[in-house]
Image (cartoon, rainbow, N blue to C red; front, side, top):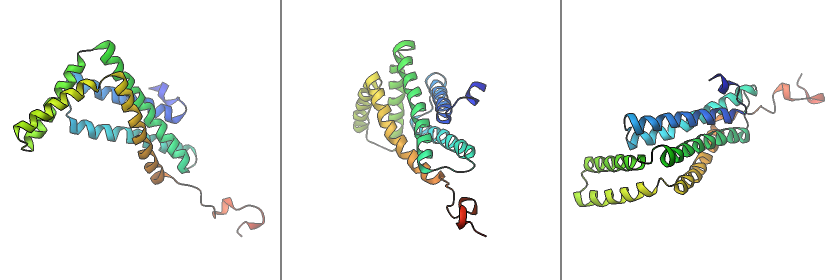
Length: 189
């Protein structure tokens, strides 16, 4: 990963890393062991936040410990957007060119996960069957390139919101009353 170390801008480096980690998690879940929808959702929330945080942290370190809200927002938003775009493009490629049968496998995993969750909650069988039919329909149609790209647009909105909240938390601006910032005749004695 020496190439990643020298990649500039920072958001591109961490966005690519986020995309690679997302791809590896997807491959693990598709072909080695299905992670489960709850854990997938948690991972899908934690991974982008982690890489967005790392990007903003590195930018703040490069700027002597300072990070404005705007710079943090930009860094984290672009990090999240690049990672999500890589993940979506990978999904489009794998489903359409490498393993078209994966849609059926993903639909089956989704249906089984839905059934298991509903049974554990004690939902009546007729409601489970109705939910399973809906899950099958939505899962099969959810993997078209257009629907995946629409998912990316929705992801961009959520990424922006998360980046804005994180930028508020991580911002650290110079104190305007610090002795170093006071110039000329107003300098503190």
